[in-house]
Image 1 (cartoon, rainbow, N blue to C red):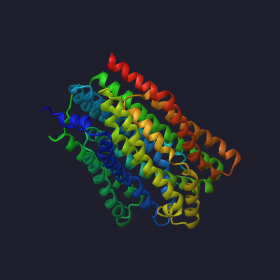
Image 2: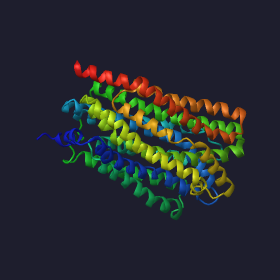
Image 3: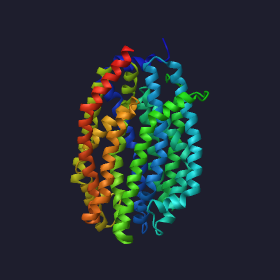
Image 4: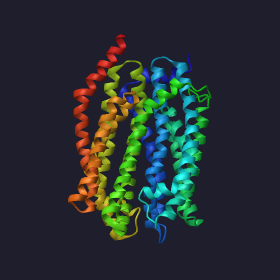
Length: 460
């Protein structure tokens, strides 16, 4: 029996509904624990005596750049894992082995370049992201320590995609839980007991990411997994294919962070120094909640991505169609529940991060404005990430970018006619319009073309 038979048998013989539950749910819970990296940091930092509010705002300012660092991990991880699954579906097993080896080397090289570049430019970068002079000492401390852990962050998150892609969703979840649990334990010790403040939050995250990385590499080197992590010769064709598939995820993350930068800049411009800092703090709370929404939803789609990749390689359109439906249902249930919860308990959620009653009330109102049409995000994730897993960037790109363009337009237009706090309605407007556009384009254009492309490939 071939070393690959376990993964191939799982994907070929298990029903799509059971696969979505088996692969999507553990990955969703894994990403739910993963958000603790950010959420726990922000809860503890926001409660630091006297400087909690400005420290929390400083992390919010750093967030776009640090999330962009993670984009490299998902570019290589999702791109490589998708290409590996496509290769298995096409029975190209040697190519599957070389894909994971090439991805490992790519992550090492990217980590070195990103670390050097960010450390060298951190002052200009942080001020460019909307940092004020009052925030800078806190932002610079957190940013510098976090960036020093780039190797662990990229290797852990990037290589974990290859565990998920081979059907080991529980092990992929365990890797994330290890990091999150260590972070939860370290944060109060480093921040409060040792008096390290915001530096303690950063060190807690770096150490937890290092532990996750060590577990992921250990598991991928073990005998249990069919496609093991091994060093191999760099092949330009494989590298280019990884980048072409993963580029979509990378661009989406970069654009999301660019949008946060624009939002912070608008809040600073129209809110001034004092009110601007307050609203940027509110934006940090909003982004914390959206992380709770996005990460588990992305866990579902990345965990199920191998279903799309493998069956695309195997030319099985019927299973792909079923997978689209079940992934949307699973994402919709989770995101719909989160939308209802935040509309009812918005101020309670904001209270986890903030001690000031006035600021808590303001942040709660901002959360409600931002999330009124949150269910639309389920449509985006189900369609965009699934198409990306099959390497169909030309289909995924337009429906993803349209929603973001609507958001950017709202950021520029809303402050011209309404008070600056109403800029948070940009989230609701873009979710509603973006989801409607995505559904129309998918059923009228993308689905018929996808079916035709697969039939053409199968005949050829």
